[in-house]
Length: 474
Image 1: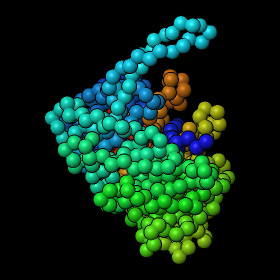
Image 2: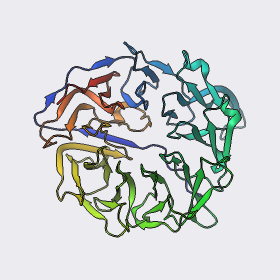
Image 3: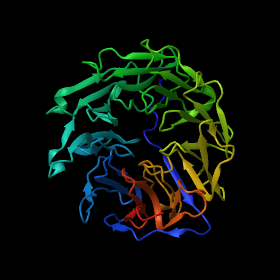
Image 4: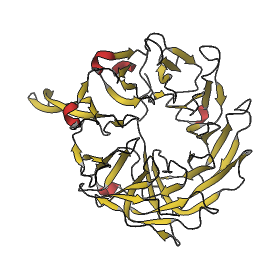
């Protein structure tokens, strides 16, 4: 039997209990509309649009260029616990899962001979043109399309899943995307979300072969006349591949599994031979993070440690640098600018809650990270999956917040959620980033930076969305 598809998104719960003095931020712009706590928010790549989801079971779309943004309710399908939502890189398109029709099915009642009629709602992936005056009126139903969804960085392609392990490629420059779709046929069901390289050359998928009992990694050439004709198949991946990543310079392909003991693999996509040769195996590695300059790869390792691999070294696997944190899982993210590596540890909510956790800032030098990190103390982190601590696109600010959901999973009730609280902004350009955080007051549950780095958008427990200006902060 093939392993199940890896979860499309994960859930991170952070409860902030930061003590000490801090500077108060200016009053935010407040957007109202939701009737329950904000659970997720997505800002479009160009900063024009904002999507928010709430415990009131609605999703709203906000035009952030309007003088007084109004959140319009977006109808979503109910086929799964996580709605499918994604913006194209140029803010032109929004793809989402919408209810399309209702169907009646018959079910045999257990213990009885009578049949009960059930009414189920069917859903479809829909493409909306956000440049139109009425985007909803321009909705195009994508036939034979399922989650997951991913846009190519150049905005030319939309990739979607389909049953049986195959994928669909939709040409967004075509007048009718349904008439210009390309089928990518894999031999086995997918085990990881597809990834498209930053140069939009390769689309990478992974599957588990029930015949050989090993993972198969597929490279689909998006520059070919028919990208689905002849994929390059990479063999030698360690264990079941559930995570795929590509470095920003599009050179290295990284695959990893759900357990550190199986390790991660590196393939050089710029190698002369096609397909690339045997991968470089990184031992005791999982949970991939890559620096913006494509030099460093951070992976989680057992016993509260992370490993830092130098991708510019002659042999990247030869001498990883070990970073030690708290006991338990250790997660990492690289802020833009290449100056810091951020790491943190988490506990499972609500069972293994510790009184405090710490966020570590590792200063990166030409030789590697500093021996001791700058520590942001006094946090509680609760984990049910993995997400990233938000960092501004210019690498200036890091926010620790009462973040409930980096994914879209909806809890059944508020009792399953930890309490929200104030958020704190840490200045990564300061001589001592831990000295005086900026305090953002309110029952803040999740935050995200605008693409231009000028504002921070927060979702709160009272159902409001708050937009904090950052230009006056020093």
